[in-house]
Length: 167
Image 1 (tube, one colour):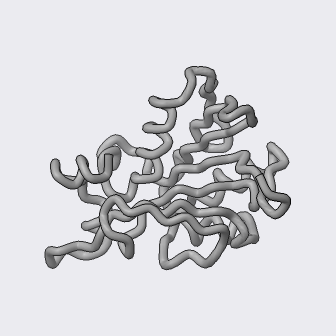
Image 2 (cartoon, rainbow, N blue to C red; image 1 turned 90 degrees about the vertical axis):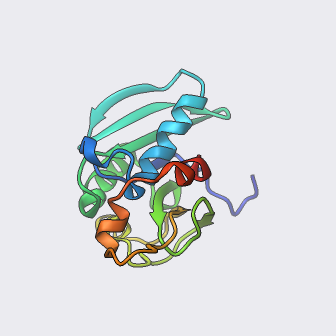
């Protein structure tokens, strides 16, 4: 790691907690955390703190916390900021994983910082951390093809072909 790089200590997947949202586009962040845990060493310990499920463990020889806030998307910042403050984690040490309609389905884009891009979960995190200086991993969910609105689209499940691409 170069001298200008900061290690990620907290990876957060954004989503909505209720079961009816589990397979929806807006839960792409939750899906990535679940996928990572399924593939990672089984040394992560699960607990519930700061309105979140968290997993504490290590990856590639470094301590790592994983978080799935159980707040709704628009309040994600409450859980993220609470955990970060209690653990002494700076915004630069946080990676937020979330869905993005402006990217084609399955495309991933990583940025070191920036604005919300209109994503309410990211808006909440920026507001509660008081900083835009956290990393983001945006997972492309594509744009609605039908006449349904943005809310209906992001809260709809992936169809079979889409789920395969996302996987």
